[in-house]
Length: 90
Image 1 (cartoon, one colour):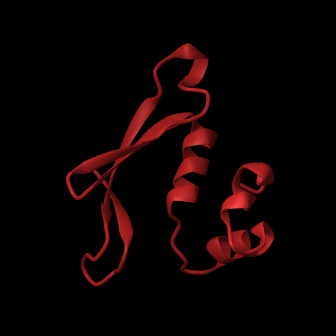
Image 2 (image 1 turned 30 degrees about the horizontal axis):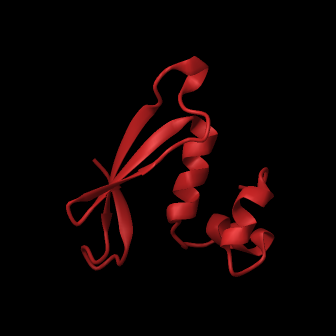
Image 3 (image 1 turned 120 degrees about the vertical axis):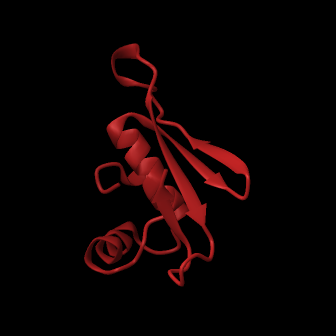
């Protein structure tokens, strides 16, 4: 996210540098924005299952070398195990 500030800063309510410090140095959990950054960085497609629906977060460039992107499946839990909102891998 730090390397592509124009792609992410417009979606934040605080300066990007401060946000990245908070995410990196505290127990703050990432969300949709971080998933989009991960999909873009690693060239993967991320599918998030929540309440019987599936949302797809696609990488802007598709897979590597024209191949189909690898798919990572996550489940989003709004209130689970007393942890609050979080993602689990499937």
